Image (cartoon, rainbow, N blue to C red; front, top):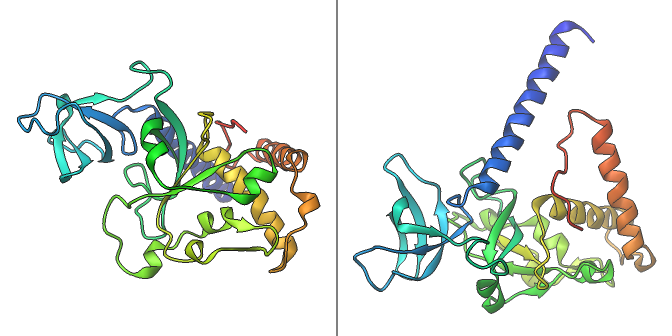
Length: 255
């Protein structure tokens, strides 16, 4: 390997480290997209005291995009009370959001696999289904379809390959029709309140993907879908990450 290749690898590593740090900062930001807030001090009394999701980070005018029952609104940051653990330690769950294909990725976009924070009371009233394979490995996981943060153009933009794999039934190796196309973004969460991060979601999906690859379109080997099999897979993947300095490292593993 020559010096130019060394320099390219170093720059790639620095970029990856910067992206990871930006993502960790976003996860800790109480006014980041994906957080929930309580509105206060607004002239519109109908909105005061109610909790809504942030769908757009703070702009240069100090306003944050919030999705309300009256539509999306840009509201001054001073009128947003973070809906966080210091208010009620049991109220907020760490969840993973899986973006649809057409959603913008990056530090300000909701796309990709991201760690988010949602109120338990909101999740409890939304329709959800349980990932069949997650039950078999001892980590029952609810999958809830949610609205995208902005309008998605075209059917392909709503595709969510990741979520479709999570809803595969072992007996057939396929997901039911509603999970095969036009799924849109989803939230993955554990009803017991246990944290579930983007790193957890990637590890679980990697395990399911390995089962699907071996099955090659047929039913899955259910003898291989056990808690111990998943834990063995997880430990192997984490060890492989540690051995590769250029691999994205799983830093928030809860399963």
